[in-house]
Length: 421
Image (cartoon, rainbow, N blue to C red; front, top):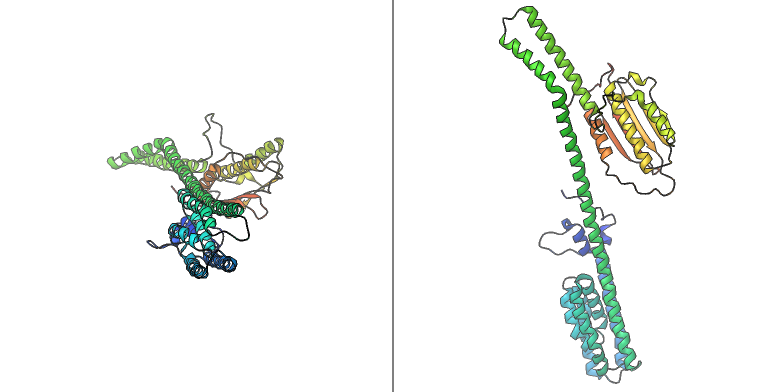
């Protein structure tokens, strides 16, 4: 199912039907033109009333104009009434209506309001080349029209200049409305492209994480699993082996399987922790969180730390994951909310799990934009999931940001979750 575009945040009844169709094509059935929204009905009725009002005002001018005979005045009013009724067709045939209104407005004073509305509709719904031709012809006919039927109240040059300027203003207004709609559509396309690119980056990050799992498993487990396979094969093909040799092979198989399982837990526990450490130093655990916070305080950050009483009692794999989550959270605060006081909380107990929370209020003042793709949070989510836990992040009600994770901590000191590969 196609998602609703993010730009459709307002009520749909307030959006023009043509723009609503462009923003969300699913609102229109195939082969059918867009249905009028409530806003369209209000606008169309207002345009009809405006055309009628201009026609009524023109009738008073006709009755006082000595250059217009009675028969022509009656015909003028009939043509004007038909032109006002044709305003309701402006959305379906904007170009045809504007072309038809060109000779009609030349023959009828009372059709002037309908002609202006048709020209405005053409400027809103069609490209500039159509507007230039129709608008240019209308402007060129103005001097001839008032030469044949002069206005008794205004001089001829003044009348021509005022009507030409009014025509240009109407065309300019319509083109402005069209440009605004085109800008909204372009922003819609850019928002969709940005959402697609962000989704692709997230999928790529997850794929790279899984590829890293495969590489780690091959490098770390190949030797142990090969040794296990050799001894298992020896038991299969030497059923008559002495009991001592059979027991020794079984012991090797048991130890290899246990070591392989431990290595597999370590791989999943340290995955997505950053670049591998080529120096051979041990990976940090929860016991190193005090040192990390002290380093951040020395760098000028305001950090409040609340953690479990005995960090060393937390399993190494769980503690490593918790440490990396806290580290990434502090890094994000330093980048995106400098000067804000951050609270790091690590709570839990065996059997209940370990909860890690990094929370900061909104930054004070303007913060310069910092380039970032969000891959760190994606990696943390992947890491917590692989460890059997979960991670959530987002803005708080006060405008700050919070990263909260739950990690399994079994009562026996293990992860408390089945191994997932």
